[in-house]
Image (cartoon, rainbow, N blue to C red):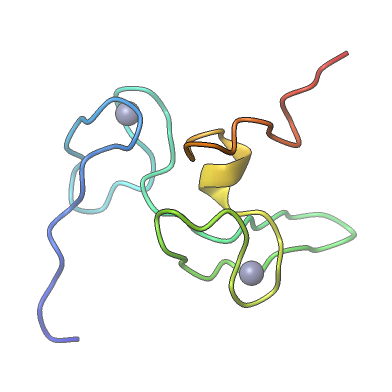
Length: 84
Ligand SMILES: [Zn+2]
Ligand SMILES: [Zn+2]
């Protein structure tokens, strides 16, 4: 991959990110649909980059960031969505 992909606009607010931004500066949404990488005693996720419409990681099956943030159309029921 010699050529660099231009930054894609934020999936939530369509703001164009900076070249090295990982999260949108306009709304805080993740800009890359990575595998959820949870740091803790039980490490889950592999941090792989998935397609923008992937709800689950193609490599390890953990939910992707876009899924967790509720950014995928039709996947609004996030594991973190129910707070009661
Ligand atoms: Zn945004
Ligand atoms: Zn993964």
